[in-house]
Image (tube, rainbow, N blue to C red):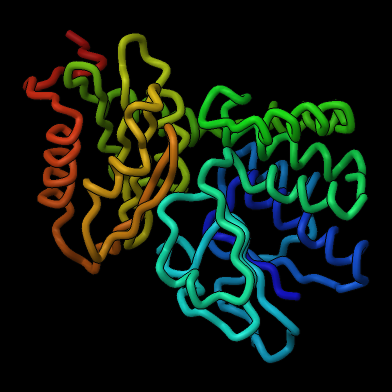
Length: 320
């Protein structure tokens, strides 16, 4: 089985892929090869990849599908725009929790997409439990961290199933390994980027927008959005940043009444792709050498219109 996930994989995708490989091997003796594309740049994610899920291989080219009995995608769907497999294959499996459910899944042999779930790792926890397989401490640590990061410790879009999986994995994990991941060292470049992100942030009433410019790592927009949404009285945080020839967009909201997945669908138009659910969403837009400033202005205008903010805005940090 070839197991794929989205580009620039996060903890939930890394953990759920490893859990699927474990299920296949232990329940049916089916070997799995895990392959991801793009960078793993966030310090915590690098530590997780090294310490908890080293089975993942990096390749920006899709392997030869003829070498595998079947292909599985975890934490993503064909046509989502955040992966390199946008076609439906004859022997195709998809396990995901993201909104929206793409039309392509109607033709997939086995698709389990539950948007009410807070993480794909929770879904794989249920598969393992149904097969009577108990995760070892390293897999339990990976799955716990995947659930924790996707649901922000059960405070963001978590279902009762996420709570059950979270607590079960909490009792099985390796605390020292979890600490090594969560407290991974941060580079000088991270702090420079963080400082620039704060200076690039602008408040519009109860929402905040940060135009991050060129980013050295593609997932920094998501990391910055996670920080800015914690600002007092802010209900939504939108971060926009360019990595290579792609504009990366990350959106966070505080209230479930402001569904991030639905908002991002309204502010990103083709050829961009977007998805998410609850209070977390994101998207990508290929730039193709065009001037990025009009695009940024249009996305920001759409965002303010959707959220109902009409103020001129003010800089988050205004040095005299």
